[in-house]
Amino acid sequence: MATLRCEFSDAAAERAFLRHHLAMTQAQLRVTFVFCSLFYLCFAATDAIWLGYSLRTAVLACARLLVAVTALGGLVLLRRRPDSLPVTRGVASVVEIAGAAGFLLIAALRPGEFSLHAISMSIVVIVIYIYIPNRLLYAAAIAAPATLGFIVLAEQLGDLRRVELATMAALLTLTNVFGYVAARRYQLLLRDEYSAQTVLKNLSVRDPLTGCYNRRHLHEQLLETEISRAQRYRLSLTVIMSDLDHFKAVNDTYGHNGGDAVLQRFGALLQSMTRDSVDSVVRYGGEEFLLILPETDLDGGVLLAERLRHALADTPVAYDGQQIHITASFGVASVDFATSAHEAHLNMIASADELLYAAKNGGRNRVCSRQLV
Image: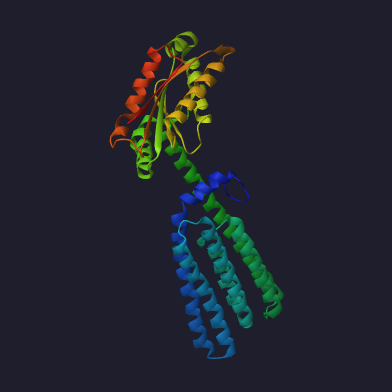
């Protein structure tokens, strides 16, 4: 976690966090924008009641109306671009700037009321830090200069004694510090909660030893999702069932810790040689691993299986000062949804499993494949 920004140091993790909370963020923005619009419009009405009609009253009304229009325009943009992180961030920042600038103009046009304006300025600062979801650095970059500008206006235009001005400046500085600390704590809590949810989700869908997906996730979501996508777009889908050869002998010779080292090495190899965020590697059971390869035909699946087979055979697993030589057998089954029969995909895994055992019965350390039609 980046301490100053209160964001994940990894940009991808931060984007995933923001994407996860996007709907909630936009809901908060909508509520806050509506409230702020009503707030500024109501005060425009009170200006007319208490000050009467004049050019100054008209300028005040225009300033308040401009802030309300900016907030309402932000609502329209959020409605049109509900999936855009940059638009959400931009809208939040623009409304914060408009609200702060509008309030400074109002304070300058009513210079005899800076003691009362200070209370409103404190509310504006708190809203910027806490009630409008935005990057903490952006909020601080807007709230702090706005506060400084207000203090300068109070010193130049307000009829305040030095002690009153100093007290006002101290209280507004404290409000900024409080707002920053509160917003920082809120941002950290949100990210801690997200981290905990991510860990729990990974534990529920991944094998703790190898980091590959587990069989439960395969049958609950993964396989059905990829088959549905391949059917919809009439793409090829290939699965590879792999199994370590003579794995029991590894456990008998090197113990279960040695066997675990081999499984970890094989799982890491499978994940490193497949496409990140496209292909899926599943620990199917024991020493069996299943690969799901979207948009891959039979030739592509066989080519990958051969590469994996050679890489494993050519690279012994280092364990406790020893070299464990291990090989694997592979069964490759593929369906082309542009030409295959409607039911061809129903036995993909079973077919890959049969091909795997054909490879084992054929002498191990080999690849058997079949196009399912």
